[in-house]
Length: 484
Figure 1 (cartoon, rainbow, N blue to C red):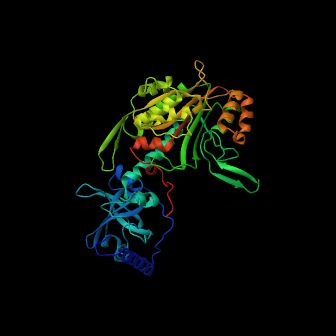
Figure 2 (cartoon, rainbow, N blue to C red):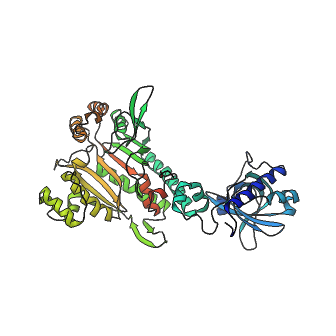
Figure 3 (cartoon, rainbow, N blue to C red):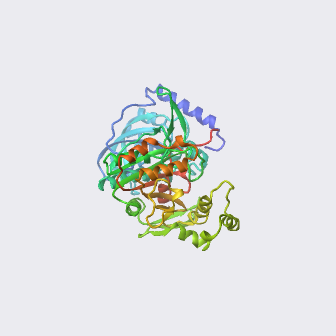
């Protein structure tokens, strides 16, 4: 904002220019405009002396009297344009004088290289496409207030190249993940987002009511139980990129609405799925991050860590990692384990069961301090009721939890396909709330589900790790915020 000029004055000036355009016979909000090129790709693959038609937002404007150099841009980049009164005519030049930074414009012209070597377009004709009635964020400092960046993402995207780059990478990664799985024979499927029983994970669901059926429904917390029904039906390789909803806390790593990839592969196991995930993530890193070393920086732009994705990734048993904290942990009584938590500085509650106390130690002293990839395998069966028990130790299940950047990125299971054991596990998890058991799922298992491996990948956390973002809100276009 110009010094000494209030926002209200700026808004008034733009309204006056809007009326001036109308007085000049110009529709300030345009219409269909057929383009041949986009600003960024045109500059990146520049050729001189070609006729082009392109459009974008005016993001820079240099007044040189009867001539103007201005930049137009969209999410994919920008290019410089040159306009003068002689080339477009005095009437058109007068129209351009009523345009501001932030306005959308279409230009027709010919490419040329300036004497300073800047790829440019010599404008022969332009069309006003949309008059912006509010100013852009400060062109020198961008949009630095995080609260505004999240609440008004469009301002963030128009002013912060780093934000645009993160979201373009996210979009490319999702497309590449689909291609990666389809190339290996997986079929993309869709399952219900409104479910009669909230299953597939232990989480608090969002509840709603369907009037026509007069029944309660839940926004899904996971698609797992429906995807497994497809295995029963004979689809042996399936995946879904889906939105899940959990009515729980919000933090820099949690959003109540989030994106997951879940995939199931008949006749595979958790180790097969771990290999698949390792290959996929490294492929994404090499394609979108220029290698397997991912640098993370703080808000000041200073390096804080480098994540090394070089293969093979570490694999370690859950109990072995706990023993690195306390070699005698599993020889202690439950009361002694609670005492050790106090000594280790790990907060626990009286309501926690013994396996939850151990899990709290894992999360605080192992997970949050593990940055390079680590597959944590063979966890207690109480933690994962949908996984197959280990044949050598029935207190454990054949699973992995992939930890990168101090958080779980992906769980993977050898899926439990014994309907009798599955019912027992779900009843134990539900406690007195037996109505929470999905009887339709149990019935499906009784028709026979092949042994299979399954994975989930938290897309938001994966993008955070690969782009260096430290807050989940930086990788979600429109994160949920408290109402103001």
